[in-house]
Length: 67
Image (cartoon, rainbow, N blue to C red; front, side, top):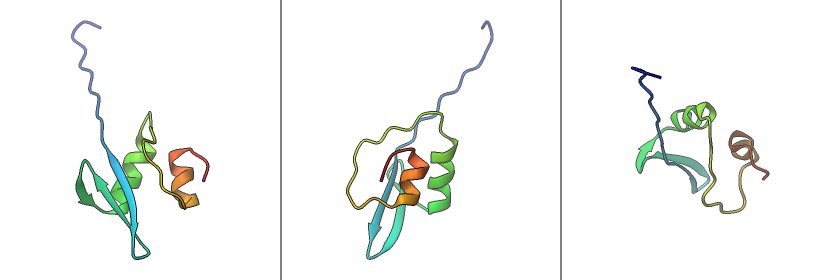
């Protein structure tokens, strides 16, 4: 791979629920749910590092884990 440019991006995406409203953070900065969803769906690898039940079924599908 002489002269090849390889780029690896890594983001920490946090989804939480406050007062019945889903909120998202990317790398510790507030963002909208659509941006968080785009990052999660576009990732080659997703690692669930912490989970609090109840976990929304829609988010579980996005992460590829069981709710």
